[in-house]
Amino acid sequence: MSKFIKHVGIIMDGNGRWAQLRGLPRYEGHKRGVEKVKEIIRAAARLNINILTFYAFSIENWQRPKKEVNIIMDLLKSHLKKESQNFLNEGIRFKMIGNREMMPPDILKVIEDTEALTSNCNRLLTQFAISYGGRDEIIRAVKKIVMKNISLEKINEELFSSMLDTAGVPEPDLIIRTSGEQRISNFLIWQSAYSEFYFTQTLWPDFTEEEFTEAILDFQKRQRRFGRVSEFTRS
Ligand code: IPE
Ligand code: IPE
Ligand code: MG
Image 1 (cartoon, rainbow, N blue to C red):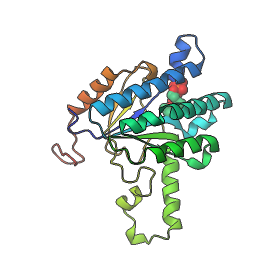
Image 2: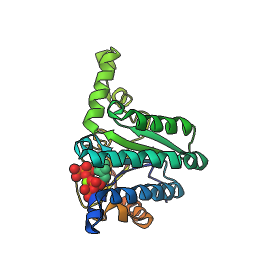
Image 3: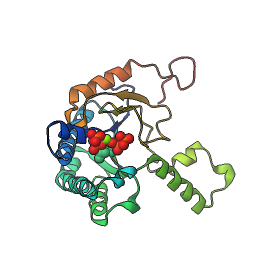
């Protein structure tokens, strides 16, 4: 069924509201959110999707109260410690995209250990956007180009893409956002130029494998034209 779909991006939104609706602290929503990530990774592997990109923590999210930021970072760390061996066993490669300089060193170490451990896994690539902002990624790419003294005539879209954190990774075919918000919030702004979007009211902790499958079925009914007059399939 996943004939035309290689890469799905997911803006996992609504953890806080999920908790608030139940009279629980926001971190309970984040905890449930982490469980959902595991479920959707497994579902994607079964559906033969090659790449998943999860928006886990935006560069703007650093502005949240310190207590919430710390809880999210701790959850991330414990999740990776607990799951890294499973990733390896299941052929799941883990990669972070985002601003590493802004990351607390202990969390970054766990991230980089997991990246190294799973670097040869090739069943499914999971990119985690952490401390990630599309504009920040573009600015860092510009700085790399300047630092490398790349000559003007060599600068084109392909070269520019190769300077992004997502270098070498095909662009997302479909981007799902939960929680009813219909915006991109600085996620993959360069890479989503021709992505299809799927917005759902479901809060991320309530998202299910069934709804994920529904989103993919919905995507497969769409016609992607990439500016042409009839459907065009990119390899
Ligand atoms: C998404 O859920 C997770 C992160 C941004 C880290 P939120 O925490 O944004 O939940 P809402 O949008 O406040 O419900
Ligand atoms: C976007 O959600 C970032 C993540 C899901 C990690 P936010 O909750 O931070 O986005 P806004 O503030 O509603 O745009
Ligand atoms: Mg939110």
